[in-house]
Length: 339
Image 1 (cartoon, rainbow, N blue to C red):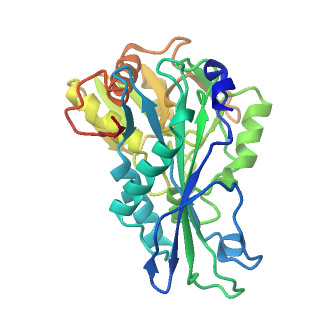
Image 2 (cartoon, rainbow, N blue to C red):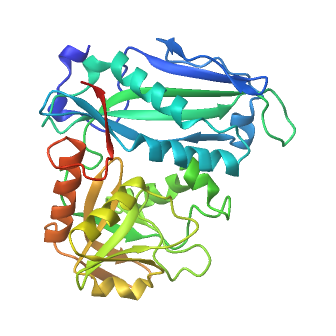
């Protein structure tokens, strides 16, 4: 199957691979890592993940590099973010060592599905944790399944590193189900599906959220963090309801390395008009430059240009260079999993 894939024309979707890896939490401890070729999970109809959403997922990528090695990017940060989610919804934490061992194993087991360098495709790694105990009372599960699946994927947005239009969705926000924003850390995007569909139906690449409380501050771009560039400064929102993006964290460090100032703060909507460049960033797209943002309620358009800006391009190329082992990894972010 892998040999027949058109790597350069892959979409961002699921493709069957050979194996996934699983580990069960029972009797207060984690078990042994299991290798599985089944795509399905035996799950009780009363499992807490189905009724009360006690589940979390992460996302990272494996890159086939020009030096022949396969690297993953900052898996320790994904482990830490998952642990933060676990604390928030009372799931047992997956130890960093177990997390990384399972990432390495599942990538190695599915090596033939890692797309070739410069195909524009990567191997997406999806860790998932669910509460599996059968119960109908609202309390934490006693048993859990942690698994990692992989699938080869193409660019998240068609056209790759190209500017896309966004639209502000005021009548809907995905902070409503859980005001703490914990569910975002855990990866429950179901509350954003309606807004995302509205944006797509109107011809936009993605929805753009304002803060849930006052609807006046910039929050997120769909499933990605927002950043703006102005006056030699990288500016990104600070909010308790924003997914703590590992990509954004990395870009902030690179911006400082390039001599830019970095500000993480509240950004009023009207400040959008002052940015020279704007983008959405995350694991799937790395950076998706924003061409413009429409506020349909006010009729205002915030225009950043049809072509990606020079700072966004420099950040994108340098981060991608690190991920592919081309640029110096002076912060020690990448991990070689296949030498």
